[in-house]
Length: 517
Image 1 (cartoon, rainbow, N blue to C red):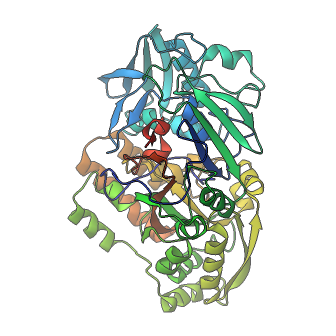
Image 2: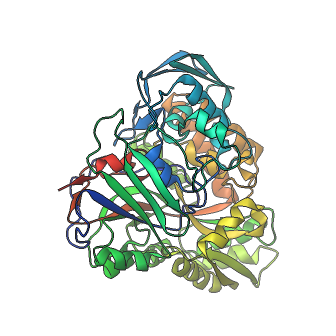
Image 3: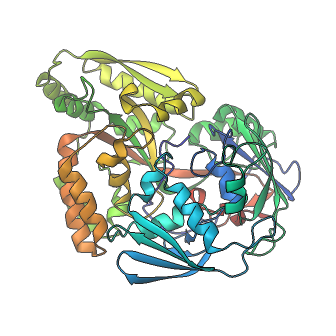
């Protein structure tokens, strides 16, 4: 499970033209693609209220989409107008049909977006800028924002799955659950869903994007990446997305394809809970953590990171030299045990303390959490690592963040927008239960800077705003950025994915990029 189903960037936006060599024999043939997943919750594929987004990405689509270079392009909407800075008018493609043969109209789109922004759903914060959604005619939808927000352009390409209004309203209590599922316009139709084993799909014969080249797809659940890797090695899985690259390669006897990082590793501390509410404790932790060692334990395929806005996102609004100069001016907290001890000595807990670090059995989360505990023990902070199942840990998302005051996690930053991570992990509104400000960090100045950064498209102004924000957050240390990690793909010899890149796995419909050899 990704801690934040959101959003991500790379140091380079070039396509990967290579496919994985070796491992994963064809098995069932090239007319059937078998995809492995770990840690998903398949009990509900409601696109707003469920966690099985990989299921939805085969069946449902967004209004817009991201190109391999991270540019917003037409999708279900063939074009968009901006009559004023706060209004987006989407012109829908004519003749797009749901899998049951009925035509998609503006009523379906408006209903889908209004449904997704209901505050009862965990991803509703993505739509916090929206004032209203209006179906103006059969093929026109207007989204009016409360104020200009340049991030909305990316939201329309990375969130807001469009589903059939009639089907959703006929199933108000069990929409998205096994036996009901969802009805979409995507390249595949959901044929079966079992929360314990996986899902089966068949090609949508009426898909507006043309004939689908692979007729059937299976999505198979695995308890952990080791069992998934062994299945890949035995030729029972064709595609997998490992989080722990080195361990998967060893167990699967294969070489992974990797694309520059969208994943940002973090250590979060809840600033409302003692002893983590002491800034000197948080700074001590930041100095005590050794990023290079953590990257090794986490399986490699990452670079040390010192800012909550990854450098690649900052480089979308400023030159590399300006970004490098900014980062050099910020508190970096590079590993230094002497400085860590000095900070702890200034805290209310100069001799250290005991605490629990809760994690879950996914990828390298357990071993990385143990490594973090080992590093902090050197300054007297003794963490007991408590390991939950993925299902157990997922339940904490519906509880106050204070119930898990510290955690090692990662965020996906799946757009070039430098405003994405601050809104996701730092804004006061995102401290609500179910959202991703795990630190419960609330700073009015930071909130105002987030608003300023979203309100202008001028790169120089945005860079100035985010520079100020990073200085404040660097002093307060609600989170410790650890690394910017790569995306990893295992793919069998029977298939190829020549365009696998930074944005591939977070957006729809990636399944169409996979081809039989």
